[in-house]
Image 1: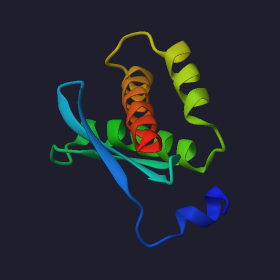
Image 2: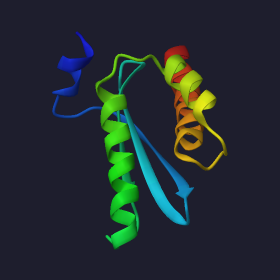
Image 3: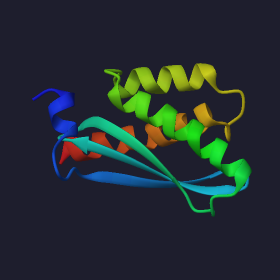
Image 4: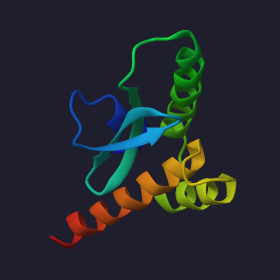
Amino acid sequence: MNKRNIRHKEELPMFRFRRNYRGAEIYISVSYFGTEFVEMFINFSIEKEYDNIYMEAGWDMFTRVLSVSDLSVDEIIKHAERSSRKSDDLPGIVFSVMKEFQGKMRKLGAE
């Protein structure tokens, strides 16, 4: 089954990660099928304030593009690490979430 078909399933298992981004608490959901990454979504815990709408739109676009790409978790980690300037910028957060996700997938594969 290819990734495009998997994304259309009604339910997929996922892990939810909480991080702080520019003073806002964010929740990053990473879904998987078997032990493979399928897609990533972001939710902000703050109200829709004017400045936050643009911040959320950037994250939304980034996670949508990432979800439709055929990049492996290793490739996502590599490129996020290369792009990050600080551990709490967008690529730095994606790097830490995907590293943690990768560890969880390894544990699932070992069970």
